[in-house]
Image (cartoon, rainbow, N blue to C red; front, side):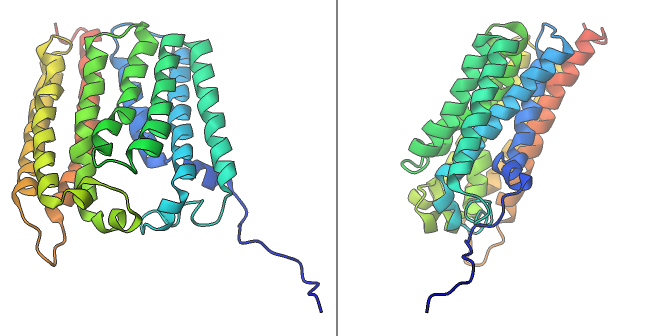
Amino acid sequence: MASTAPQTTAMLPTEWRDFFTLTKPRVMTLVIFTAICGVVAAPSSIHPVLGFTAILAIAMGAGGSAALNHWWEADIDAGMKRTMNRPLPGGRMRREDARDFGIFLSGVSVALMGVAIGWLAASLLLGAVIYYAVIYTMWLKPRTPQNIVIGGGAGAFPPLIGWVAVTGEITAMPILLFAIIFFWTPPHFWALALFVKSDYAKVGIPMLPVVAGEKVTRRQIMIYTLLLAPIAIAPWYIGGTSWIYGSVAVVLSALFVALAMPVATRTRADVDAMAPEKTLFKYSIVYLFVLFAALVADRVAAHQGWIA
């Protein structure tokens, strides 16, 4: 006899919190912060409403591309301990909803930037969305251990877009801001990858520690940290900032190198808490926030006439 009980589905009701989670709020914080720094540090000025609109568009673009990342990697997320409770692998949302949400946010962000600010900034924003959602997520990440190196460009766009939204042109300074984040990404992310290596190995993602081993990864962390240091100081060297930013960049970069050295030279024991790697990862986040805050402080000091 057929059951007359109502059919239930495994899908739980979708709440706004799940849609918000799709935008990767923690990553969004860094995106919004560096974009604001790009806007504030630019040599020209912009009306506060237009400045807010530019930041909103950048945030929406980042959130949209993050949602597309969730949609594409739902099966991978389900197999990783640190991502298995996200909305899609957790069964709280349909994959199509995440995809449509991502496309909607991305499309609106580019249109808003183009109409309100300018089409050069909008083109860069579109490039950032495609870079992260397609080039990195769909192509690079599952195919090459250099995914983080090449894909680092995705997270480097916000200050460049913010600067261009104000000035309407691409010059040496915004390119350097892009380069700072580009070269910061490998040591930042590989430090994380070293202590979540087993997760990536389990789902078949060819992160550098999984494919090339820890020794190579540690050496690459040191190489990119050494490359990052002069690039971070370069805005001061070319005269784009004063000694305020320059001194902060020198101190922060020297500490970055100092923290990267034990990570690069040590061999992990069988039972290892990975303290140096975790310290480097946490410091790398502080590094970028403080470095860009120093850029803004430098610009404010110059604008107020406190420095020549």
